[in-house]
Length: 291
Ligand code: ADP
Ligand code: MG
View 1: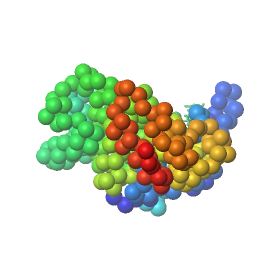
View 2: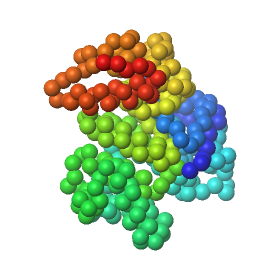
View 3: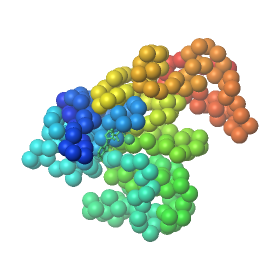
View 4: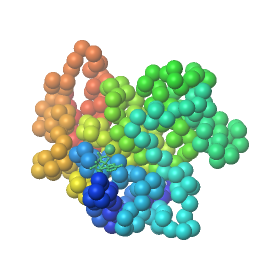
């Protein structure tokens, strides 16, 4: 679905003990629209979580504007409740918010509140479960509390996808996941992108950025330090240093023409699986991958 989300000169401050003010977002300008997959990175405390809370009006800027489809989300006529259907936020460790007795009921919660006909609700649940790789017949009637941690997280994500938002924003979705969990999450992102749902995610995992992000925004001290393609970030050492991140080893091998499999084979992972990941990274960064 087509949309635009714009932040214009957005400034936000927290008031500390004794009334001291602490600037978190500093005259920030950003624009997002459809069919992008964007990573937001930056040091801890740089304002990433605060930024995405401005997208749906969970926080209000001290000055500046947030515009959705050109309309000020803090304007008198604007419904922020409706906005939250179009922009789905997935917080860190979203599995903590599961509460229904079955996976079906948990995922159906938001579409049910929209008062959609029952068969449409079921259709949305099925589609959302397919997108996160949970088989409907196996999981729908199970208790979310009896699932594995990875399945719980995917159930929580499905609950947001069932609203069919135009944009889904994830706060550190790969935190605490193992390689398989990260791979599964990358498939969720692929599915969303195929369905023309825009994706924004905050992460510290640079290999994941290299693999799926078409655009990277580096935040530092509440300002945009870089906004561009991942290949332009990973080939700029001074920017990498300022962003306080490291170039993932695979990207390093690829860009120096060495075999990206060097030092990357271990007994637990199939060579083919690793190679597929490397090819995906190479494709995304426009680099040559040869064994
Ligand atoms: P990030 O997600 O990039 O790690 P945050 O947006 O969480 O950064 O935080 C940015 C800054 O705002 C930090 O200095 C943090 O301490 C401060 N901060 C975040 N949340 C609060 C809050 N609820 N009250 C006061 N200060 C906060
Ligand atoms: Mg954060």
